[in-house]
Length: 34
Length: 292
Image (cartoon, rainbow over all chains, first blue to last red; front, side, top):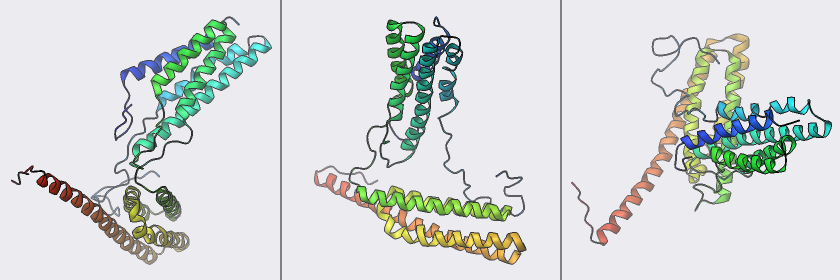
């Protein structure tokens, strides 16, 4: 995230973290022995 | 409002070279991505209603926590973007993105506990917290561009600008009521000019005293005139009234533009002083500036 002027830019790392987060949520909410 | 035509060769649209209202507009980066955070935990509904009551309750609490986290994240991103767009900004009162990270961790931990067990709860929670923080980062935690600026003064400016924006919204609404393409586009251009003045004042709070009359009295007058004109025009469609109103807008716009130029001139002389001081300083210390 750019701290300088202008607006937020996102790095590849942030995108990866986001994708992993969504996958983790799907995993945690779909699997699991009820 | 949709516009059927416009531009240089279309009738009644006025000056094609005038600055349009999209000047300096930027696409918001708070886009669809965050919405996935609302969707991803939804399978928990199915989980909840296929399990025993206590687990159902825990699943639903986990779901609610994650949805709240997603909502906070989106709000936090919007606030962060607004923060970055301004030159002078205060930090958000509530660090929403950080709270979103914590709540995401908590929600995932609860889901892990309900669906798997204690160890998994810790794993999910920790992972969720770290990933969310890596993806969205912290909120801006410091005020920006506020050092040396009087708090009282900035608050005054913020209040005056909010009020001016309210007048502008009222003007838009009234002009829209008149349902005339020419009036709408004229009003839009007037507003662009007013907003330019507002930005100038926002960047240099010292200008508030000089611009106060413009932001208050004149703008209020413009609002009242627009409302009266709209009422009249709806009933009578009088061309004369329209021309008078458009002439008034032109005059106002000219004076706003002149005021803005004048205020910017002050900023310019500030810059000149800075340059002069630095030049003198350099000359004193024996560093010669190549004037060629």
